[in-house]
Length: 165
Image (tube, rainbow, N blue to C red; front, side, top):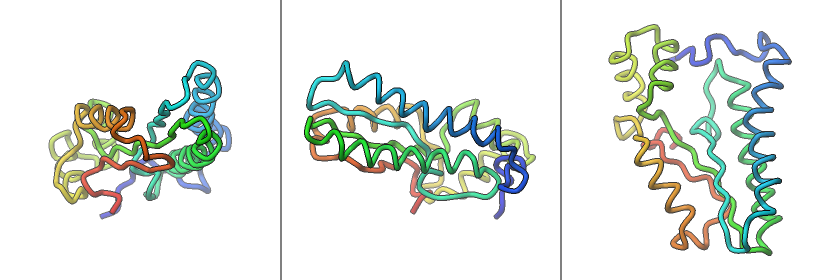
């Protein structure tokens, strides 16, 4: 199945200023949060950059967003190496489709279907057959922030029901 997820955000048609804006929000935003947050962190801390399942894969129609989410992974990998001497772990979190109004809108635009039908189409793309919940994402963040994950750094942590497999 092909979904027009981004509504025509294909490379050839994507305006350069729109591409720059998407990179600025996602990559530069994560960079600035790291840059200015590090001065307030103790050694042994954890940085979690929220990315997306598309930071691990690709879909047509959202090239700017995919480039930005992949850029966050590159930033994370560089920062993880740079901050290892301070025992600061840096990871990215990659949620798949999540049960929110924002995701509902994306799915309805991508499929042209009403909310319930659009959600079922997306559920069909996810091997575990359902959307992630905000609570499940919060639990993943807590794990990555806790001492239980003390040896996890430079990791892409997918919580996507197997979508990126």
